[in-house]
Image (tube, rainbow, N blue to C red; front, side, top):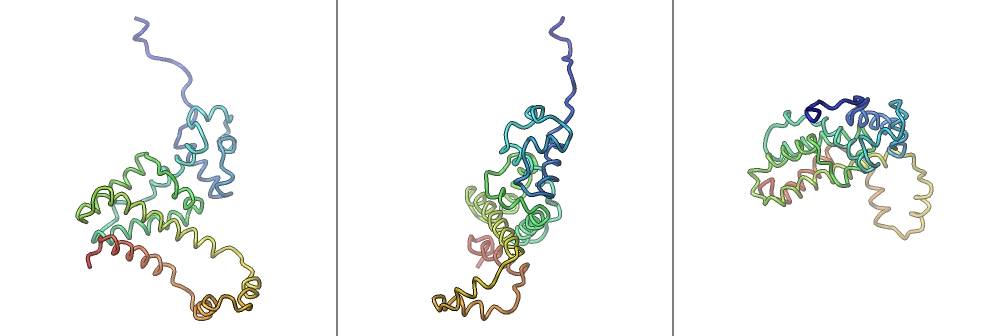
Length: 213
């Protein structure tokens, strides 16, 4: 019968994974502002209209990018106590954000629900199984770890931007900011960023009870 015949038609020329990888390469090279469906289509040699078969909007495209880079987590390498594993998870996240500087801003938004992102959540929840936290608190803990990591990565990026100290010094010389002047004067030694990051994560975990008093 005709109804039992297999459907025929052109095979898809592209895939969502291919589109995500092209968008990631574009964002890595030129920044997230350069990413659009039209720009990604041009990068893979396709018409913009044809990509709407795979992604419906810019929001879906960026979600697909975050889902793709979530595959870079090495979840099976986590070991040790719950706190050590969560610190390892956050450290891997920071390394990913350093490789892809556009990720921190997107990480603050609605998380994707693809298999890579779900594997991250599943492993995090498994680590928190013995923490005694309620289900909602566990999810909030993972969200906060991600937020702390993203904020730290954004701060690192801002520190790398060229700054003109003359304007700041001019303000400090007015005498209106004595506490800031004193703090900057005493902060002569550079901050150990890795120590500061690990300390922030561990202090948070201690605060929510993952690390017992």
